[in-house]
Image (cartoon, rainbow, N blue to C red; front, side):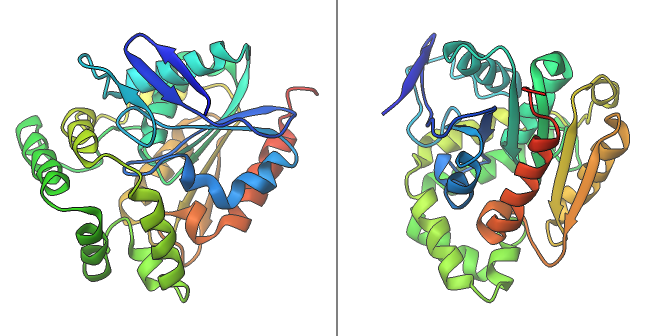
Length: 278
């Protein structure tokens, strides 16, 4: 299995296909498996390189500092590109991976051939409140992951799917989609994810000035039922110069699971318009 080492982190990634390189970064409780239903299509035309964030999947961080913050994850993305000798690359992100990806683009958009932000935001906390209330909320969420196993968590999502699993539970393929989600999340270490939750989601500032500095071609996608990320997506589309915004009707947060063929087509079309070889 391919890994690269950055300080005390051993970061897992996959590498398939050839052509323009696309680094892909998933969201909370996900891993490289999140992209499995689009990876074959994308790797038929491009080099597809999904990675596991710190605290997720097969990536392991050996002791402090754990680096569970947007800037460190952004630096991990750049370090993966360095390890693969990629001077430039396309960046595809989802949810929490997008928090890190858009913050990275604010600093280094010149290295990006394009940026694709799905179901995400430029703030690292989309919940209202001051630092004390945000810390309390995320500590409660972390304790949830510490207390319950994945079977219990998935069972609860059937009953309380909002906000992230609403589209899956509403789908005509709900059983199949939830089974896919279960196979994905059960690979995660719940205690590592709890630590990630306590540390990562701490900045409600959308960084408007930073968004305006992003110069690479940018595509923003969100689902009509992805309630938390509709307004943040529209804000990013407004502030990132010449960004393209797409809404998926009757789709929730997990676009790569819920509507993989449409997502793959949109990603490939957008990257095809902005090929590095042009």
